[in-house]
Structures are given as C-alpha cells and as structure tokens.
Image (cartoon, rainbow, N blue to C red; front, side, top):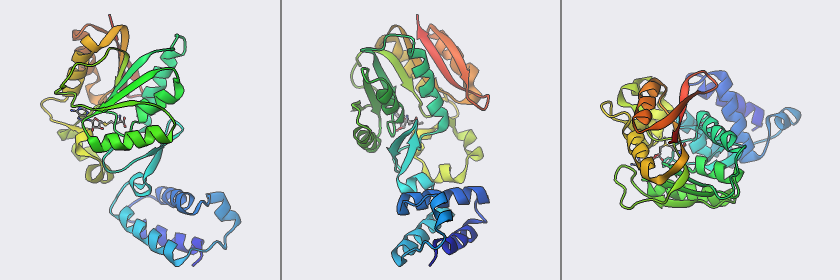
Length: 283
Ligand SMILES: C[S@@+](CC[C@H](N)C(=O)[O-])C[C@H]1O[C@@H](n2cnc3c(N)ncnc32)[C@H](O)[C@@H]1O
C-alpha cells in the first residue's frame, strides 16, 4: 500500500477524536520515528510504500490513538530542552512550561561563577530538569530524587543516553529517611493538580499519566511546596535559590508560603501570561 493512501485511512480513523492538524502531526511523528521519513521526503517521494508489517504496526498505533494514548508513550520518547528523553507510563511527559523553568535557572546562573555549584531536583520523573541542567552546566554536581523506583530507572537511562552524570536517589520527600547534603539550588516540579481540577483535564492525561506525579488532595494543595521549602531551611545554602513550577491558580498562596519561611520571592509568568514559576532566595 502507498504510504499516502495509508495516510488517508489514518486521518479517517481519527477524525472523530482529534482536529486534523493534530492528526497530521501524529502521522508525521510516526513516519519520522518508525520509517525515518520526513514530511518533506514523503511529499518528494509520493510512491513510498508501506510493507504489511508496517501496516500492522501503524494499525495498532491507530487503535492506541483512538483510545487517546499520548503519542509520546506510544513511540516511547519525547524532546525536552533540545534533548531526547525516553518516557513511559511511569513518568510524566515533560511539558513546555517546565522548559521555561530550566531556562530561568540557567539565565540566573549565566552571570555567576557556576563552577562547583550543587543542585537538587526533587520529583525528577524522567529526569528532564536535572539532565537538561547537567547538560548545560558541565561543572555542576547534580542530584535528583523521586518516590518512584520505576521513574528513577527512566531517569537513569536518560542521563546515560544524554551523556551526563546525575546522582539519583529513591526518597519520599514527605517522609525523608535521612538528612540531605546542602545545595546551592533546589528545584522541583512537584504534584500540584487538585482533585477539583481533574474535570478540566484532557482524557489523554487523566487516563494515561501517573496519578502520583500529578495530583494532590483539595484540602492540602501545597503539601509538597511546604515540605520542600521546609527542607530548604536546612539543605539550601544561605543565598541559595529554590525554584518551583507552580499551579497558576495558587500562585499567591504559594508565594505567601515561601515568604512565611523567610524566602525573598519572585513570581514569573510563562509565555501565555500565567504565573507558573516561583523563585525563593534564602536570606
Ligand atoms: C509533576 S511530576 C514532575 C516530573 C519531572 N520533574 C518533570 O518536570 O516532568 C512530579 C514527580 O514527583 C514524584 N513524586 C510524587 N510524590 C513524591 C514524593 N512524596 N517524594 C518524592 N517524589 C515524589 C513523582 O513520582 C513525579 O515523578
């Protein structure tokens, strides 16, 4: 079968589930990933054929997409901060707003001597924050922890694939079983979606991404921010910085919490104009 003919079938199979632009994007991702064919190459070579094995594979993926499985889990990878990351259902798919958090940290550091700086990433998931920082700060000592052993396996594969060293540790930040080193920067994108916000979320997220990575109870929405800021009291060096990705609907509450712990705070908006990040400097 011609690949272009299969594309028509693929679009028809998904037209009730997604806008056409998104279906085209899925198709382009799949042909690039499995056939090493770009959209342009397909346009230049319209006679490109699919083998029966390839049709079988693409038919299976079509069914997964009809069930709203994220394309990143289907192909097993995604891009973050210009790097490739393995992802599976044990880790959150890294989001663009988290790239903005990494950019903020790097731009704050660009004027300073970053030689032996020590950084801790809490709730590392795929390792996207820790690994992008390690890639851009070759002299920094980077540690990361997560409650999920399965997530740490993914982070370890990603550190190796990207050629960086990150010290990974299995720890529950709400019940630490040892005291931690001291750091110059602590960064975290912890779970912050309240149960009450679930109804606003897309099916692909609700049905596929790990609950433990995303949700907090309505009556304690800042539980992770409180535990991490408390930890920063002892584990962050004086003048050190705490960076968080935050729930845009709780920006003021999160800022108040950091202030109560004595941190000098700056809230920052993402490219869509929402408060999605905060920095606290330890006085
Ligand atoms: C929102 S995800 C962030 C993942 C990754 N840092 C990112 O930005 O894509 C939160 C992460 O925190 C981890 N986590 C949840 N509860 C935790 C706990 N009590 N202690 C440590 N990590 C926890 C989850 O396993 C998940 O990997």
